[in-house]
Every structure is written in C-alpha cells, then in structure tokens.
Length: 545
Image (cartoon, rainbow, N blue to C red; front, side):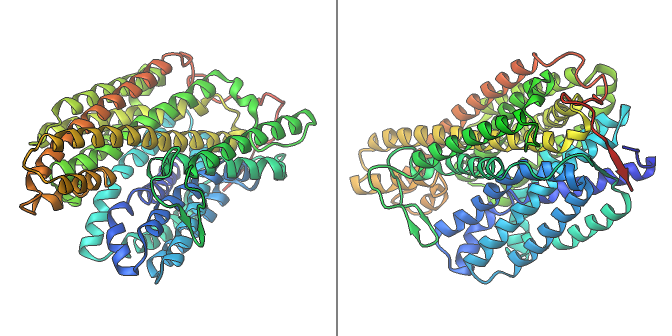
C-alpha cells in the first residue's frame, strides 16, 4: 500500500479517531438517559434494556464478516459506508417516537459500528510504518479508552441540558465531518484476490453464535444463569418455561453455532476455498497470545467501568454528571498517554510499553479498591483513575499494534475483525463475571446487615433488601430521603462499598493475569515490520487514493 503524504497521514488518523470515538461513545452514552427515554416514549424497562443491549449484540455479531468485507471491497469504502449507516441510524434514533423505532435505529447503529471498527484498525495497520506506526496506534487506543469513559459524562450533560434525543443527534454533524475527511485524506487498501464468498453456513453460524454468546454474558445476571429471576420478553415472544431460564439454552446454541463455524471453515480450507477467518493466523505467536491477552484485559477494563459508576452514584450519592466527572480523569489519562506511547515504543519497543501499561493498570486498580469507602475519597480516586488511564493509553493500543504487526497486510481486515471480536467478547465477559459477583456479594451482605437491625420491621427489611439487590444499589439514594428507610440505606451503602471493593480487587487480579500472559509475547513482535507473505502464499495488494 502506498502511504499517503505526511500531512494527509495525520489528517487521516484524526478522521479515523473521530469515527471510532462516535461508535465507542454510543456504547455507554445511552445508559444514563434510559430513565428519561422510558418516561418520554412510555416504553417498558424490558424494551429499554433491549435498546441498550441490541446495539452491542449486532456490533459483536457482524465484526468478523465486516472485517472480511473490508479486505474485499476496500477498508476506506467500508469505513465510509459504516459512517453513512451510523449517521442515518443516529438521525432515526433522535427522531424516534416509539420503542420499536428506537430499537430498530439502535440495531442499525450496530451495523454501522461493526463496519467502522475493523476498517479503522486495518487502515492504520497498513498506512503507518516506522516510528509513526506506534504513535498512530497510541492515538487510536486513546480514542477508544478515553471515549468509553466520556460516554456517561456526555450522556448526562446532553440529557439534562437539551434532552435525550441529542445523544443521538450530535452524531449527525460529526459523522458528516468524518465523511468529508474520509473522502479527502483516508487512503484505500484492499486485496484484489480476496473473494467475498466465504460460505454462507460459516458466516451465518459465526455471526449468530457470537451474538448468542454476547447475549448470554450481558443478560445472564438479570434473567438468571439457570433458574429464571424475571420474565424474558423479546417483542411478542415470552419465554414459556418456569423451571429454567432462557440463558442456558441460548448459551448451548451459541457454542453449537461456533462449532459449526469451525467445522465449516476447516472444510472450506481443505478444499482451497475462501474462508471468513483464516485460522492459520493463530499460528503467529503475537496474534495468538495477543488476542488472549486482549480478552483478559478487556474483561478487567470494562469490569472497572461497570463497577465504578455504581459505587460513585449509589454508595456516595453523586449525580450521574458528577460521577462522570470523576471518571473523566480516566479518559484524560488515556488521551494524554496514547500519543506519548509512540516515542516510548520507538525507544523501548512495544512489548515493554505494553507490560509497563498493564502493570500500571494493575497497581492503580488495586489502589482504587483500597481507597473505596462509604465516606468517599474523591481526590485520591481521581488521581488513581488518571494513573489507570495512563496505563490504558500505553497498553491497549500497543497491544493491538503487536497483535497485527506480523499479520500479512492483505489479511488485515479479517485479523482486525477477529481482534475486535475478542475485545468485545472479553468486555461482555467482564460485565457478566464481575456483575454476577457484585450481585451475589451485595445481596448477601445487605441481608445480613438488615437482619441485625432489630428496630427494622420484617416487611421493610425484605422490601429494602430486594430493592437494593435487584437494582445493584441504584435505589439507595431514594431510600436515604425516607425517614423509615434512612438507617437501612446507610447499611446498604456500606454493603455496596464492600462489594465494590471486592470486585475491584478481583478486577486487579484479572488485569494481573493479562500482564502475566503478555510476558509470553515475542520480544521482537512489532519490531520486524509487516510480514509480506501470507501463510498460504503471496496475495496482491492494491492502493488507491
């Protein structure tokens, strides 16, 4: 691929970074606006939950096919098509007058996001070389790490100041700017020998299988991992069984579909036919080990972002906007460290920068658990979150750099799709595992504390306990203002703080596991440049601008 002119190269990176920021923000920006959406559109809590989860499900399901599509049609074309889809969907979401329209728009947003994410990573992977490569990946990683944390702040501010529709409407002008930048500065790359026909069985089974597994991880703690904890509804369908929740059957279906994908892929490869994901890429040590590390690190990073707002808002009583400002320290650390990772990578190598970042993240997370208390230590918390964000800026992007560095450039699309699927799956796993632990610890501790309150009526105790457990502490602020439940609210605050601390320490252990796994990354990964030859032979590469 012929590199764009130096000035255009950085304008290209800026365009891609804004594009990636749009789709990452929309993964978290909706959370704080859901109560207002429910009231305004008069939809049920279940419908609102699908508005939130539907985006991530479609996003996860289409990453692999989208990555392959970019190799065939061109990564710039795929990126532009994704931005157009995302902008149109955002406009429809902002104009929605009912739950069905809003859900449809969110699903369409997921389609656009699935096209945008692998296209950005593939373009950076092919357009940047030498010392610029590490800096480009640093900016890309900072855009992801920073905007995930900014989402709740931006969502709270827009909802309070202008209304929930603006969390979608703001994407339209920004998306149009991204389209203009794409036309002017983003170069094209694709593989002319790649075939779009990768097997309908493998493509559909992979998409449906990953969607099913992500659904299980996101919704398992709410609907019950085995026995039902609440009715499951999707449109006009209602789960008919009382003895078992829908989660185990959906999990079994997901595993079965992934198995079908693996078998179909192997058969097509034996016949010499094109496949959705070339499994020989996993023979590359940096790709194989790096993807496993990305899954574990994603588990820990998104787990922390899941726990912190609950602690800040429910245990400390901060508003969503004020809690978002504290978490904004994480975004600032990531945004500042990301570009700086480039010179550090040039001097010390990507492996050392990744290990330093992961170690900093591990220490910062453990220290955050130490300073958590019912009274709140906001300044130390903000400083530690800033340090954690610096670790994210150093580690996450350069880990992606190492994963793709030895992948043949003509297979960047499918490799990017695989990596992003791994990252998204790890994030969903983090929310599932750490969310389940939080629910279990919180429920048991609240029950024990309220039983010890002799003056609390049994009916009030049961009501408060169930309310705090089912809402993950979200009802604690309301309990504070009622005289009859204020003492119970104080105990619930202590229980939530204790549970959040335990989960934070567990998150630190997961991050430590990611650090230890990353020690196995090849020392020269990312230093040799791109492998020009694919495992199966040489493929033709084209470049357009």
